[in-house]
Image (cartoon, rainbow, N blue to C red):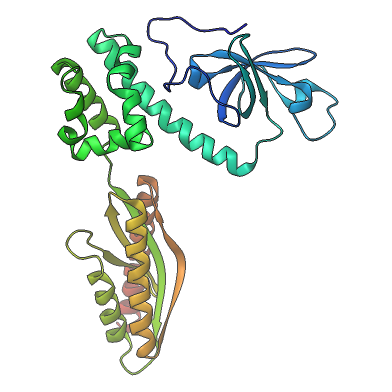
Length: 309
């Protein structure tokens, strides 16, 4: 028998009441029996399905409790759906690693959309099912996923929401925009690459300086790149970007420019750490390291002066 949670704000994430055969779904284990495990389909308003014992693992099963536990979430594939009798047969053993990545990505998007829709529902006192019927499920059809539509709303709200103006109240529109902007507006990401630059040729330090300046120019005004000396020959390239991948690409391009120029001058560049996103903690550690090295240099300079006197 299919179990459905009928709470006022509970609702399936997709228009179809049931998944189709071969769909990947996220489930939570409800109870374990001799024949297999009974689970709730989290994306379909917690309707019940079953993973038979033979579909839990490719290996020989000695203890079902070691394979699956009550309360744990699993990614499974739908084998059969009998809508009349209310049976949904699922398989865990037929899910590949690639399937898991794909399903997790889709579920995380759907969960973010559902969270926004639920908050709008609670704020405006409108049943969440009504919101999905008015615009939510249609956004899935038009944009492939409502999450992608929500991201576009951040940039072009009127363009995306115009077709739903007749059914959407100003209160719902305002609550929707507020939630989307708060949760989906991209935040700048700090990025850094660590490189070692040396040049023992005729131009020496001047060649290094010239190469690093050319590297900085790669960033431009939209994504300025800063280069700081940590301790010879180690330098760090830093930038911030709304698009992480684009920022990493810029830093990698800057590293290539530095490497090409310094090579022409008889020098060498070595990537100590590739371009990556860094946290505030990483920034603090870098600042602390640079401060320590600066103090050590100051102490050495003082010792030299004392010896000369």
